[in-house]
Image (tube, rainbow, N blue to C red):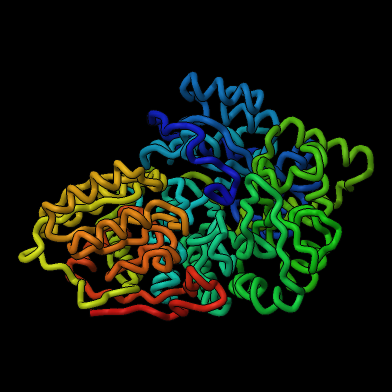
Length: 619
């Protein structure tokens, strides 16, 4: 769930340089897949490149124990190339993985999947990503009994994205929840999936199926579609269908539900206090919907859920939760993947050598991104040799993984087509679709005295101030600059002034002075709390008598902390596509249509609702 779900830290490393490798020749591809095809021993009635169940079982029976163990792991690797990364990435790989390159990682541990991160320098320009993906597939298929790879990433859109511009970036989940359109959710999955598949990425850790009912949730929040389980369930299923149409594996996360916690499982061990009855009515609903939609994989949560398992173990390591409930009661027989095994929530109780073994015993199939692949891989190998895990148990998970690879067509077409990238990724039609979608999600929460829309003829000079959090991967930023540029394109004369998430008294004074020369002020707010000086900034700007428009660029809950403001818009994220849409709404070029997908409680009395689910104004 790293700023995300896989435990990555987007600030860990800067984006590296990119370069292209040569596309594999047809001869190279055929040579790499020859051993695989032979190993399948497919009956005469089947196609050699589309193995059936019998063929898959035969393939598993020929694998060594070491190959089976490796197939369970999905790992990171630094670099823009599978075989020729920059020296800094070689050094990082040697330090963390004990190998120089992704290709060496695959050869040594026979891992079944690779996960891409921005900070690992995997996601540069589209052709670089494609060549990296093909290099990874080539390295795996070149091994004895080589298999195609699952190549995954967190492309949730909104706050969590690994592949940035020029790929199409859509509004995030809570924004889609504000739009309330199943068609939009399915379109997002279809277009995002098509672009990922064109880059050689075949598994996406999305959608987030958590029901966010805690405004203080530090790790889910706007990554959730909302607080109404039925609405979340519909949008989850729709997005899953979209990804499936693009032949990209969708992943519902984080089971059994991470929507009601004030602790970030990257850094602590959250406890969910819901009763079993509440879990059935709230958290379970979207996961049931995802399963009914044929979800390809489900990601676990590193949370305690005493009502489901009172052992104190995280759900990732819980046999009652994963095997008893997910597999037994919900009837799910697809791939179960852990959230990142580097996150504190799963490491609190057990050591890194025990976690992967206990996860497999609980019912997990894929082990995601352990801190040390050598420690985790050898621990699983030892557990089988010592009899704690049976080889038959490994075979169950490997068959699920191979079935998924078969459904994705990876045995037939493991490589991405270089010629298709420019035809698919970030096309004008895809970008236009994202823009229109963002307009349907922008939510007008307050509009006293018809403050909005602003008129560029009467309020030409705009001052754009406020918070400038680091922009999500691949977007332009900073938010004030993006907003100012968007307003300028709409006919205003807009000036940006960054005041930060905790403006000092001197910064507030500077903003108030600058407002004297403006006809109106737009202020971007970010996670405003009772004692936060962003409140002071807004109050002081309102006191100037100038029209002030607040734009809550992350949590819509900000509006409860801004009682003085006469106009407030919620965007649910601070990516370019959402900010530009907000500018068009504020300028009156389009009418606001979004409706709150979560309730906003009163700041002075959280037991009372200020704005209910479904609230949203228009012109």
